[in-house]
Length: 426
Image (cartoon, rainbow, N blue to C red; front, side, top):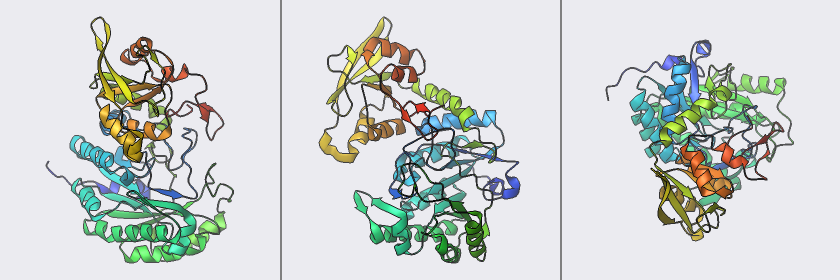
């Protein structure tokens, strides 16, 4: 690959004077998270709200690359391609790195930007990001004192071990702070996000700014906490203008302030002040359809081979179907990983059906849905004849129609509308 100079000055988040000239796109490929912030809730995915952790869809890497090129054609001002969730990119390292490599190979002029809580930013990961020429990195650091951090984070999961309290906050803080000089050694711009939580860390902002500036951070973005339904801090009030002014004044002694943050969704696209994520959702579906055409099969959870009628959590096998000249043909019966596999069970299942464009089930939990959709396998909850369902999938019709056939699906999101799982409430 021939390296050209990347136009780093075009990043609208790092250069306020460029926000009306250049846009960004966030690719929602990272559904899992490795920490639980007390202010965060990702139980809803409503397109009518804009905050980190929200996305109406999750894309697989090839789908994300296909979507990017559709988005650029529709909005040529996009200069930055970022990954910011809806979980954490490095709780999903494989899909994150695969996506970044695909973008660098197919859009070599595009700026690459990643936003992380920092727990997964090991030396190996940082070097990998430098290799694909990531130019901008954002790390969310809410405390540089573990006692304060223990109030912000409910838990921190490193590998298979979960840490709580001061122990978890200390581990997270150490990873975050160690990453900053590593990024700077590669010439990568580093922005620090800090969520201001009244009574928790608002008094601590100047200390954060001092510590991260000494390590080489370039910009500080102070974000007022937005109370989220279902979060531990849902009953706390949002910080007022005076609190934010005091925090920025303290931080400003050490770092340049970002004053134009829009608290972007994990699928945000367009200019900062003209988000088009709802409009571009159709482009995501087109990208999915394009990639699905390279996946010839559909998996089915069924008890007797006639109806889609089995919950994925209890299915010990799935049938694999393909389209033939005279209808549909059952080609295989594949065993599902056993429940004893723990959290890796669903990642293993995603590998089992990786050549399938969709899996048809009577019901599925959130964990398998995220694992399967991260690998590009659509999860369709429905009940009915297998042949009818296959006709819909192979006919290129909206798979949401399959979900709609099953009574009782859907749950209320933040705006009070009813949504189908994984599709948003649009």
